[in-house]
Length: 439
Ligand SMILES: *[C@@H]1O[C@H](CO)[C@@H](O)[C@H](O)[C@H]1NC(C)=O
Ligand SMILES: *[C@@H]1O[C@H](CO)[C@@H](O)[C@H](O)[C@H]1NC(C)=O
Ligand SMILES: *[C@@H]1O[C@H](CO)[C@@H](O)[C@H](O)[C@H]1NC(C)=O
Ligand SMILES: *[C@@H]1O[C@H](CO)[C@@H](O)[C@H](O)[C@H]1NC(C)=O
Ligand SMILES: *[C@@H]1O[C@H](CO)[C@@H](O)[C@H](O)[C@H]1NC(C)=O
Ligand SMILES: *[C@@H]1O[C@H](CO)[C@@H](O)[C@H](O)[C@H]1NC(C)=O
Ligand SMILES: *[C@@H]1O[C@H](CO)[C@@H](O)[C@H](O)[C@H]1NC(C)=O
Image (tube, rainbow, N blue to C red; front, side):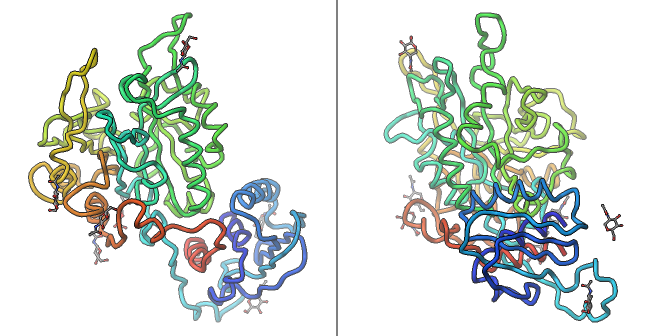
């Protein structure tokens, strides 16, 4: 019920009328939210998404305890749109016998680009991960991506991974050393992610913070960087309000909600840290290795084995109840100045990011699927936009998900082809999704 109400409140444009028989009338003028459990009546001004979401949060908090009673809440200024009504076949109306004739609503709003994903668990979807997402630098040997995070997200990347270092007390994304490639403060990067999330209300993202300082100690002999150091950039960037707080720190596959549920709650970012987690202090920053295992990382072996890399010492039974990452970035070892580095093998990208053949991403997914009876949850790649054809890594993910990849990729040229435009209003699909999911 809460979810249903949430989105009825959110459906605030004139497009609503076209949606379906479930939404009865659309008029405007008053400034109130009135609800009763059977028939929510919602009055809302045209707000931008962020205002809308925060108003909804407080509205839900006030009303969650008393959904049976009628409540009136005043929200901000006009112009106003009123939405009256809910699905006619609501289970709260047991007296109606004609309701079974109503057609089942069908969701048309994609979640993470596919309608099919709305009802699938977060743990039952394969997404492409941008390895070292912040490291975009022309002619820098330590770069891992060509396109910046906003473009990555526009193109379909749904997991962001990056290596975090401490620079005089501030967290920065740096590759190996901040002298080599400093992509700037984590907070600045997260701000871009937040801006994108605000413009794309139906998208669920995963962020993995790699703690490169996991061995360093401060003057007191304590770990220099732990989960606690991430609170500041997460809060200052505005990311915090999008973060999903799971009910427990160690989630099994069947514990995870569906994408639709995450989207309806607008808690649609899942955050992990690889080392020095502290879920007592920062409960939402989950320990990666309670929830995800990985194949060997930083591989230089183009066979890309599907064996367990991290964490050490878990058995197959435990692996079977966790999500997993296929590390599929091929490296070469180079020595520059005092560093001995693993850098992306650019020469073989056509093969590495391909859909078939020895050493390809597609082959790895098939091999892993054969062993574990399910595809990897995340496909970690370098230069996701490179490959034998544009978007080849997304094609691999689509095949793993049994959906059809039909979008153009990658780069600026295709930018307008997908994604919601900011302030474009709520599309009809939103309503359909809400109705279908809350059926
Ligand atoms: C809400 O209504 C249902 C059904 O009428 C009833 O069973 C339930 O006790 C009510 N809850 C509250 C908090 O009044
Ligand atoms: C239940 O449905 C019937 C038939 O559509 C309608 O007449 C009645 O008003 C509804 N009751 C409530 C409480 O919505
Ligand atoms: C995963 O999703 C597929 C496709 O919807 C479904 O057939 C399958 O039962 C799901 N598996 C689990 C474990 O939820
Ligand atoms: C860090 O602090 C030192 C000493 O104050 C200073 O020399 C250095 O430039 C600082 N580094 C950065 C990246 O701000
Ligand atoms: C990758 O493959 C495409 C299509 O076969 C080809 O046009 C391109 O030149 C190749 N790139 C490299 C670096 O081999
Ligand atoms: C894959 O999708 C096709 C077409 O939508 C469907 O017929 C088939 O049952 C699906 N297979 C699995 C394993 O989900
Ligand atoms: C592939 O992507 C590049 C860069 O965005 C673009 O210039 C090119 O036209 C695309 N090719 C195809 C076949 O879409």
